[in-house]
Each structure stands twice: as structure tokens, then as C-alpha cells.
Image 1 (cartoon, one colour):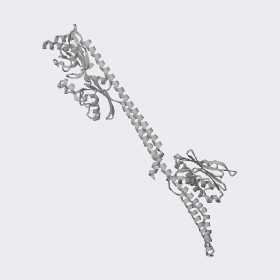
Image 2 (cartoon, rainbow, N blue to C red):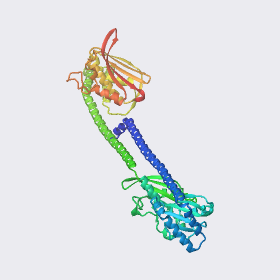
Image 3 (cartoon, rainbow, N blue to C red):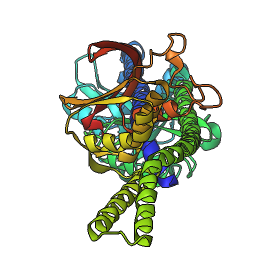
Image 4 (cartoon, rainbow, N blue to C red):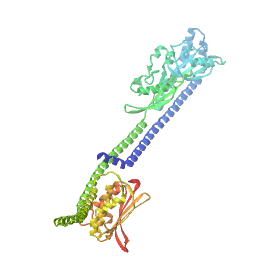
Length: 590
């Protein structure tokens, strides 16, 4: 019973449930789209901003290197010292190196303020002459480790870009040196270390930055003692970095920051020399991480990566708003489920109430049916009694003839069969079956009329039947209950009058009318006629459930419509007025 009720409830509420699910999915999809769109747009804007910032920073260092070269270095008192030292003895070179160092020291200290730590002079054969940052390191050949120096001394053209050197990695701005006769006398490098570059980036743009350099290139080019100062990157084990964690503001270099899937993604994209940005939540903060590939002067496209970490308040706000929307959808779903549960319980309660009302209606009708049975049995029982008494008397007087004996027995059997059929007709009214079945509407109406045959005759009520032969497949017992309620109602109010029953089908619409001639229903109560416990009879004759039960059956069980109106009609040249109850059924809904 409960399963059937739940099944019917779900069937009735299908459109509402589907509408809610569609709305829920639509809102969820919209909020998710907006969330992803906002995050992606923010990350894309951030990527473009970082790339522009990188180019601006690099351009600033490039302009500063040109100003340094042409304003400080490219002077006879500077480059002639390199010229005279080339291919001279060691003592002379040491003497000239010291003079060059002393002349540039003041300018070099000012350059340090602009992060230019390296000012390095080289002979035409790529031998180091003077490192201003390491004046005691000289005389080593740069041919195998410094492509930029070798290329400038070869092409005699300036060259700039990122390069990993023997001591540090950085951005090199290398210029050829010529004397007054434009004779090539060597080259000079003005460089900024990558750590100075990223600190400048941090100070100017408010992000945490550090460089990852390719381990294989650094191991090949750097002095061993310098290579040992670098650490394996947690982003990608094929890269190293030189930053000291305790000196950094927030570089997320611990081993737990990245998941294995994130590390695999980063490694794959770095291997393919891709620039990319990812976002994640770490220790309650939303972080945007941008990876910018940096090619070196020699053409190695992923020789280094600049990694920028940014704690984003905007992403935190977007995620918070998205969480609120999801929470609202969750609460809406909870409330909808609560509402549907309440509605289901209410439906069960209504069903139980309807069932109780139906049973009350049948119990009320039961007394009336028993009364009808007594009326309809009275004449057949009288006939049986008379025939039996006549047989007994004639048999005692020995005047009973065979023909009369059989005729009387036939009369008794005929009336017995009538009594049995009456019982069967009334029994079918109380059949509890709720299964659909095929039946003939005309036969069903006639069975209902037969229950009131005796009372109709006693009250001189004429039944006029205009009923088409209509085959139906629906709940016959429910429809019988409606007909009996309406016929009983018409019979109770009609005295020596006419009841007209019409039943026709047109375009799959079945219309059944039961019209009495009792004068009609007062306008003041006609709108309330189908309400429960509303009765037009005296309290001792009715409790107002018949018409309400009929309304519920037609509208809810049979998916039809029932209404009442006062109407006049003519019969045998006489005009009558009464209430006409009309039932409209749609074949496709039965």
C-alpha cells in the first residue's frame, strides 16, 4: 500500500521534481561556470601582467647596462688598461688590473645599488682579466663555459640574455671593446644575478619570486664549490635554486607544498618549455603560481624558469562566494526534500481521510441499500408466499393439478432468481476492487438504476435514458459509486417527477448528465455543494459525504471533471426545472 502510494506520489510530483532538478542543475552550472570563468580570467590577466612586468624589468636592466657601458666603461682610460694588459707578462697584468679595479671601484659601488653585481673584463681570447665582484678570480678561460663572451669576441657585436656562468646565473649584457683605432681589444660584461633580478621583481610588483635553473647545464658550467650552494627544487627535481629559505619572505619551498600530480604536471610543462599558471589552496591561503620559461643566450629554451608566487585575496573572495552559492543550493535542496516529505505525508493523510470519507459514505449508503433491498424484496416475497400457500392449500384439498403445480413452481423459481440477482447487484456496489477493467457504460448505469427501481416506482419517478453504447477501461466500481450517489441524490429530491440520464461520446470526450426535476439548488449554496459534510438535506437524512466523495473520485481518480448547474427541460409537453450534474471524462486520461 505504502509502495503504491509512494509510486503514485512520485508520478504526480514528477513535473515538480524535474523542474526543481533542472533549476538546481542550471544554477549549479551557472555558478560553476562563473566561478571557473572568474578564476581563469584572473589567472590569464595575472599571466599577462607578469610577462609584461618581466619585459619591463629586463628592459630597465638593459638600458642601465647601456648607460653603464657608454657612460663609464667605454673610455680610453678604462679600455686602454685592458688593451695594454693583453699578452703582457703576469706582473704587468696584475699592475694594470689593480689600476682598473681602483678606477672603477667608486662607480662599481654605485652600480651595486642597481643590482649590477658583476662587471667582468675579458681578453679577445676569452680569458678572464678582471671580475669586479671577485677580483682575486682571473686568468681562467671562458671559451667552454661562457658562450656570450666567446660569441661577442667572435662577432664583435653586443649580446644580451640569460646565461649560467661559472659562479652564478644571471642576465648578461656583453659589449665588445675597441680602441681609438677601432681595433678589437676584448669585451666587458655587465650582469645582474638572477637573485637580484627576482628581488627587484618582488620589490616593484609585490610577488614572491625565485629562479629555477636547469641542473645539467649548471653542473657542466659552474665551479664545483659554487654548484654545491644550490638546492634541488621542490617544483621539479631537474632544476635547482640558490635562495636560502630563511632569507625569503614566502617561497613555499617545503616538500609538502605540491602534490605528486601537481609535480608531474609541472615537470611535463617545463619539459615542453611551456609558460603556465596554476592555483591551489595551501594552509588556508589561495596561491597563484606562474611559471615563465627563460631561454639562455645559447638557445636552450628551458634553461631556467622564473617562478612567481602570489597570495590572492581575489581568489579567496571568489572561492568564498562560490562556497556560499553551493551552500545555498544545498540548503534549497534540503528544504525541497523536506517540503516533498511533508507533501507526501500530507498526501497519505489525505488518502486516509478520503478513504474514511468513502467508507462513511458507503456505511451511510449501506442502510439505504438495505432499505432498497427490503422494498425490492417485498413484492417477490409476497408472490412466493402466495404461490407456496396456494400449493399447500390445494394439495391438502387434493385439488392440485400438475399443470398448476409446475406453473407455481416456475413462479417461485423466477422470483427466487430475481431476489438472488438483487443481492448480486447490491453486493457489487461494496466490491473493494480498485483494479481497472473493461465494461460497457450503458450496462453499468442500468445496474445502478436497478438498485432504486422499487423506490422509483413507489414515488412515481420516471427514468429517461439517452445512453450511447460506450466501452470504457477504467475503475468501474469507483464510477458506480458516483452514479449511485448522484441517482440517490436525484431520487431523494424528486417527487412524482422525471430523472433524465444522458451519456454520449464526442472526440474522445465522454459526457454523462444526470438531470432531476426537483426545482434546482438554491444559488446561495450551489458553490458549496461538493464540500465535505455539506448537505442540503435535514441533519437526520444526510451527512454531506456523497457529493464530496463523487467529486474526489471524478477529479482525482478518473482525471475528469464534475460540476452542477440548474437547468430547465421539457418532457411530454411539460416544463421541468432541476439540478443537472455533469461528468466529463477524457478517454486518453482514463
